[in-house]
Amino acid sequence: MTTDIALAIGIMITVGLLGGMVARRVKLPTVSGYIIVGLLLSPSVLNLVPRATVESLDIITSVGLGIIAYSIGGSLRLESMRKLGRSIAWIIPFESLGAWLIVTLVLAFLAPRILAVPGATFIDNYFPLAFVIGAIASATAPALTLAVIHEYKAKGPFTSTLLAVVALDDAVAVIAFAIAMGIAQPLVNGAGGISLYQMLAVPFLSIVKSIGIGAAFGFALIYLAKLVKTRALLLAVVLGVILLCIGVTNVLGISLIMANMVIGFVVANRGKESEPFTVVAGIEDVVFGVFFVLAGMHFDAGVMKIAGILGVLIFAFRFVGKYFGVRVGAKISHAPDTVKKYLGLALLPQAGVAIGLALLAKSAFPAFGDILVNAILGSTIIAELVAPPVTKYTVFRAGEIEETVKPIPEAQ
Image 1 (cartoon, rainbow, N blue to C red):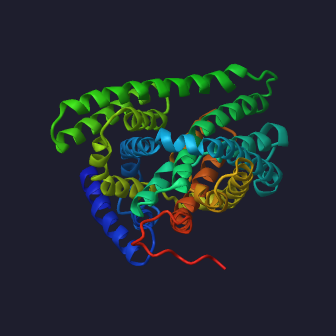
Image 2 (image 1 turned 135 degrees about the vertical axis):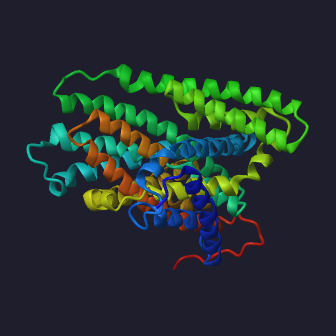
Image 3 (image 1 turned 180 degrees about the vertical axis):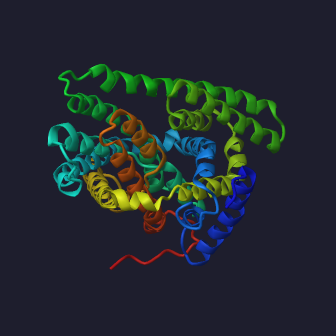
């Protein structure tokens, strides 16, 4: 066991990258190796890094999310977005609301039978719990998706649609969560009033602030990039701007993912050079390695004992909602067949934003906050283990990988 932060990070980088290499040798995505290594290092398994040290490394999560969001924003080119805009506009509401609705209905019906909390009623406990968890289930984690896409160099309409959907899902989840909290809190507290301001205005203003700050930093990065003459200095400038944006959004309590995504979007569409993205691509292996090893290290065996059944239900019916939501949205918008068939399978990842929203809900609902957090953590653990090979399958079947990579056969 090590409590030294430098030693812990060194173990995460070296062992994590070795795990990624092993994963590739057995035909799994590299990110699967990172997550499994993190799980083995976790306090619940080998306990090489204690829980207090793991929690002290949360800054790595923020920095990793910022870099990943920046890269995703850089992938959202206006030219391709215009071609796919109709598909994206129909798919996002159907898959997000589909997950929210189905998870809410299933948990509202089954939670009283699974939990059996003394004195709890459907209106003041079980329905608010299900409604909030359903809203959180609408979020999709972009980091894992981007890691798999970059590893296999996928490119095409399916990949562009997937990146846009996972990028915008978090904004939808924030709004859905605010609406759910605005309805659930009066029910739990026995109050009759529902605040439209808290439900709609607060999340809308938060998103507007995130977009504004991201745009300001994006234009600043375009200007600063013109002043530097070497790749090393350009990398320092890009990382400096991303870290500044993370710090500002943390202070203001707004979305670092949205703001950094806007930085990438502005630089990609208003800048004239691709260098601000190629320099970051050079450190992606380390960023992904540390980020996903740390994600795996958050595994807690106790969580699975407390809320394992709820976690499995959330994972399963979140997938059902997103998969069929994509099918409906793709059919209405006449999206390509690859989008219709495989996009829903690629929306399994669930991590950072979902856990963050769950922690916010925990403080608001003392009666069932621990159950809610444990259930979301259980669902996230399952998703992080299952999603990498499934996402790999989708990009192979969509036919948007490099020709040097051999495709996998269609499932019978």
